[in-house]
Structure formats: C-alpha cells, structure tokens
Length: 576
Image 1 (cartoon, rainbow, N blue to C red):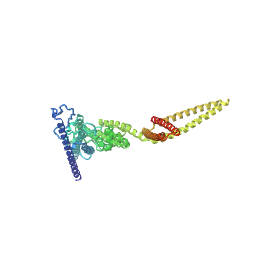
Image 2: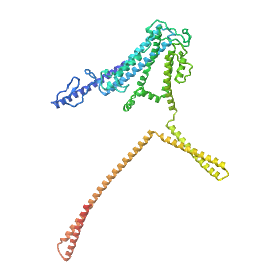
Image 3: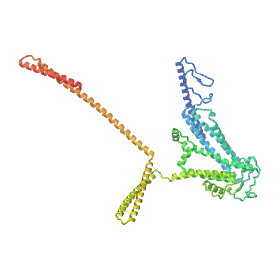
C-alpha cells in the first residue's frame, strides 16, 4: 500500500512538472513565432527558407548556424525531456533504478550459485539424480538464470538511457542531447558486451533435462578396478544423470563457469559506493576529468580500509577455489576431493609454499591451482604493501624521531671531538718522553681512530640534517609562501595608501600656500593704495608756501617711492 501511494505521488508530481514545463514550452514557442514574424517583417524582400532533400534548411544566403536534430523527425520531444532540471531529475531516477536492478541481479546470480552448490553436495547422498528433488533444484536454477537474464537486459536498457557511448556514468548521451531513439546509442562494442554478458549469465548445468531417468556412472579409483565405495571420504560427482563420460565433463565445466556471474559484484560496489552517491565527489571529479569507475572505487577502498578489503577478498577466494578444486577432483575419487584437503592445498598454493604432500590429479584441478598461485602472488604483494604502510611512521613521529637522533648525534660528536683533543694531548706528552716509543705508537693509533670516529659522526649528522630538510611538507611550504605573499600584498597596499595620503596632503599644502600668497598680495595692495591716496591729498593742498612747497615736494617724493614699491611688489607677486 505504501509503495502504491508513493508511486501515485510520484506520478502526480511528474504530471504537475510536465504541465508547468508544457506551459513554459508554449510560451517559448509563442515568443519564437513572434520573433520570426518580426524578422520577416523587418526583411520583406527575403525569401522564406526551404528544405532540401536531406532535411536541412536552406537559409538563402543567410549565414546562420544549421542545427541537425538526431532524434526521430516525426516524434515530438516531451516537456520532461527538455530543460536541465528535468534531465537531472530523470538521471537521478535512472541511477536509482540501475542500482536497484543491479542489486536484484546480483541476488539472482548468488542464488543460482548456491542452488548449484546445494545440488552438487546433496545429490549423490540425499537423493538420486533422477528424483523429483534434483529436477526441482535444477528447475530453480533455470528460473533464477532466466530472472538474471531479464534483470541484465533491464539494467542495460537503463544504462543506454544514461551513458551509452562511454564507460559507466561518464556521460549522459540521451538525456544531455535530448535523444529519443535508443538505437543511436547501440554501438558495436556495446552490442558485443551485452551479448557476452548474457552468454555468461545463461551458463548453468542442464544435464538433468537432457537425460532423465538414467543411473549415474560408476567411478573407479585410479590404480584400482573397484567401483566407488560409499564409505570413502570423497563423495561421488553428481552433476549428470547420463552414463556418457562426455556429459560429465560438460556438466563439470558448466558448474564451474557459473562462478563467472560474480562479475556483478564490482558493478554493485560501484553503484552503491559513497563515491558515486556523493554530489561533491561527482562535481569535483568532473572538474578534474576523473571517471568514477570500479578502479577508482577500489583505490579508495584500499586507501581507507586496506586490511578489511584484502581479508574479505582472500577468505572468499579461498573457499571458492577450494570448492571448485573439490568439484574437479571428485570425478576421480582421490584424496583432494575432500573439502579439508582442498582447503589445505589451496592455502599452501596461495602462499606459494608448496609442500608437495598433495597435488591435483585432473586438468581442471591443475588450472584452479595455477590460477590460485597467480592470485596468491598478487595478494601477497598487496598485503606486504599494506603492512609496510601500517608500520611506517607518520609525519609527526618522523619529526620527533629525527629530532631526537639529531640531539644524540650532537652529543656523540662533542664526545668524539673531546676524545680527539685528549688523544692529541696524550700523543704530545708521549712525544716528550723519548724512551716511550711503544706508548707513542699506541696514542698515535688512538688519535687516528678518534679522528675517524669524529669524521664518521659528522658525516652522519650532515646526512641526517639533509634528509630532515628534504622531509619538509610541500603543503606546509605552500602555506608559508601563501602567508608571505599575503603579507607582501598587505604591506604594498598599506604603502600605496600612505603615498596617496601624502599626495593629498601636498596638494592641500600647495592650495593653502596659494591662498596665503593671495591674501598677502591683497593686503599689500590695499596698504600701498592707501599711501598713494594720502600722498596725492598732500600734493593738492589749498595754500602754497615755502613750507607747503617743501611739504609738497616731500609728499611727491613719497608718492613716487610708493609707486615704485607698488610696481616692484606687483612684479614679485607675479613671479611668485
């Protein structure tokens, strides 16, 4: 009921958004028609554009861009298919559907493998090969295989709608380019990949359907002519109900190849990883041109959880390879057909020890052991790298360790220098005593040894300091350089502000000087005018007498002097 309600709400939301998008598209189309009518009215002499036989628009000499639509010409793009927000919403829904389909497909694949293992373990002991139980389990295996094929096809249908031409989640082709015809994305490589995947998922044992009612073949132990004994440690192989030996090999091969379905694990890990679900990861990765593939996710897991990832893979591979070896060796009824012996053989082969106490007898078992050895070498190398990384010192521990080593070497270097001085003094004292030749040679040897130790310690300290200087973190150096650059920029801005303020003050000072000079010139001009006016009044008196003549001459002289002073002051202020 909750799922139905959720689906109804989702449909209503999609319908509302489609209605809004349709209104927006109708408005845009009306605006486009209005613009076309305006253009035609502004150019009445221009001919209407026509279409040629290829469907292209002839612009009649107009240098406009020609757009070729890759979608079907007779199918109209819905409003949901247009607009970036709707495409992003569709992309999110498609990714959720792909994640769900991948999880269901992996569950169907694991269910088929478990049913195959259950049938192989119970068939010769609990029920005969021609019983209804064997037919039922094989039927369930076939049903799970059919469901797996349907889920794989549905997954690739969603995959074509999201990223058909590039690796997984690398580019939205149909959504980004508004494509409706899915056949455009079906390239040759994609068709071959889908076909190979369907072929791998369709593999399962079918011997029960081909020859029902037949008895299982009697197995003989190598080197003897006796049939299989029920009390043996290794149970007989029950993968085929036909007495033909060829069907036995075919059933064995089909059962082993069912483990190829586990390729879906890497797809499920990729689709359910936090790297792909995080929007920050996707945005930063798109800026740096990084494809979020399974390789990138595996690197992230090995960096965050190295021991846990390796342990899970090694344990799963150990049990799977041991059971496949047991399945291969059970047809000859040898000691390696037992599960415990198979686990031991896989372990010593995985660790590249190879005691030689047990070995595979069949070709299938030898192939399994060979593949186990190769995977063991690879896993051992990764395990050594992980352990080395865990045992290595971090930056803080390295700094503390090298600092204490530098202090210790400094102390030893001072002691070595003191030993050199002591041996020099003892050699000098032995040289003064001429009758002590043996002691002289002894102190000379001690002096040479002390010098050698001193030089060795000094070279060791120099190498340690060089290595410590090389350990400076690049991020720390970058931070220091950024701080220096910011300090220089702030100092430059402060100096620039000071220079601007000084220029403003100089301009204000010049203006004040100019105003002061104008005031002084005005004051002097007024005083000189006043003196000149008083001299003229003295020269134009009413009664003339000798005294008045003398006064007149004096006033005239003062008037002339005042005029000369006025002329000189005017010239001075003019120059100023």
